Length: 340
Image 1: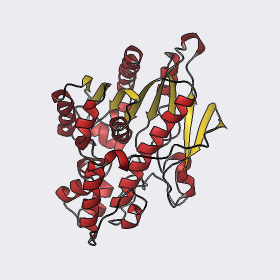
Image 2: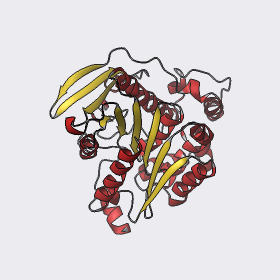
Image 3: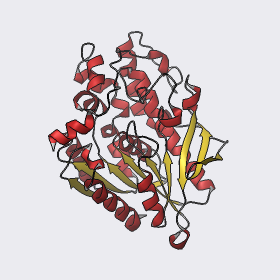
């Protein structure tokens, strides 16, 4: 299994080791500011404020320019992101719309689906179609710096997670706000029973969005972890990022500067909302350390939140391969059908 994981992980040959940067300029549009002048102290202070005032940190003005655009095999929803970045391509959100099949259409049920980091435009489409077959509309969002949102100088979604500390936080904040904006659009279409499905990085974004949006009643977290920094530091798929930062910062310090985008700090907030959640993780995961996946489930269980757990006998990459992807797809669709 480990050999298979490594083969799949290193099929990509375009990973770039980028230099470490605090990225202070990315904090200028955040809703609060720090009096600290030293970059690391400043970002740590901003993290503390973001966690203490997270509702404000992830707040936004709902977009007013929702529109349909044609795509090769269906409809696409577009709108202007409520978070402005220096990259025009990234400021337009694209979400593929998979309406529930008429014969099963339950009318008011919909989920927003968040793919994994560096997912291609065609990935997760089969899952969206399967969900739609069950009478639940699916909306697959392209994450910040992915697909058509990718700046022209990139071949991978490097600006979503990188050695630039504040830019990574800003991309996470933008993802959460864009996802919440998708629910605004779904509500305008008459959907009232709402859920979310996130995979890998998309799972992190989904948890943060759900913890800050009471409209999301049903959650699927496909791969999960407590700390953002630990995944980047230890994961096989982020080895090139660690190479760019490990001579500038330790794991303990990295964890602190990415605290505000780590799900573990929003557990109480998440548990206080009435939600039903499905957590899935893999025993041979080379990207999300197993102990962190177990830890996040333990946090949820201690707080008494309604949840289902499935542990797959595979790895992070191999979960996307047969037969594991079919088993996971069945589990996800079954959970949504029963709970949404």
